Length: 477
Image (cartoon, rainbow, N blue to C red):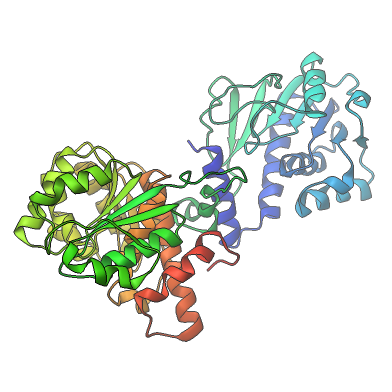
């Protein structure tokens, strides 16, 4: 089962792996034609009603596999407005081969005739909301027809994730959906077509994962999360790096709760940091009311960078988590407390291999073995894990991902603090596995870009300035 947003990410990741979208469209169109052949005998009249996106492109391809049928291809809109190059190429191929192609410039001019089969290829899984013209009138015409209706990927007007329609929608008899089932299609006769997307496109992180980070033009301050970093004491750079990374990863506001004894040093790393210091030179139980009050006003907490492993500090971490029901990234020495705490919090834990073993987790050298072992341990622990390594493994026990960005130059100290901060910013708006996978991808890609530019000798402070481009900018691995 895969959501519409996740499917779009997997499709883009497949392209990044070298599987061209044009190749996937060819396979999709062939699959649609296969269902048409299953529901109608050769010679039957088939009308393909096509939008101007890749959903329509799938139907353009299907037409070429239906030469034994009486096929008409109806394009809703002008050919020059077809939205993608590959869809346009497949339309042009039909025109050049003199298929019966018809341009529907006005929805009132759509004439389906009396087909035996109608293929609904107007809108795919990425489009939600009420149908607009000309698709609304076309959907009504399809529903008024007595033909068998085959929908491409999802019936137009139906939300693929919920199965609901906001008004007019195509009443399909069959749905040909691609790669995996969609959550909202339980009420239809569905054929799931394998179109050649490799398993790696779903397992490994890639540029498609960045599609989660939309920024609507009418967004307001706070829409993208407020993050609290709780850290510092024995170390001053770690909380500063985590906080700067959270800002670079898109959090609207980032505050740092650290011991007053090191607040001046932490502030010195970045003028934009907002400090909320507590008394003393380390976190203890006496500071928890201060920290709890701050945490309640934030969307996510990053707990651990630079806190150290003093007995009183770890006891305070345990007490905090026992009463906390929000979202938190747990990093560094604070990780040791997690297995022994009963908490309602939503946690994303970010250990390296040694810290994972100290938590009672598995040890495995090969990433494939680690994937299964980490998934099993996450299920036992009850929290999501981002296990750092040459291949990062992210799992909550049900959903697992693997990240391959990054390089040996990132073994330098502090890169984990940057990762924790980025994960905190993303956890403020995303579920733990998505947040962890995207943070690992962006942090590793940032490190790859630094090393590509200057070679090894990377500093952890080199990474945060690269995070925005890794998350939103152009270019991939």
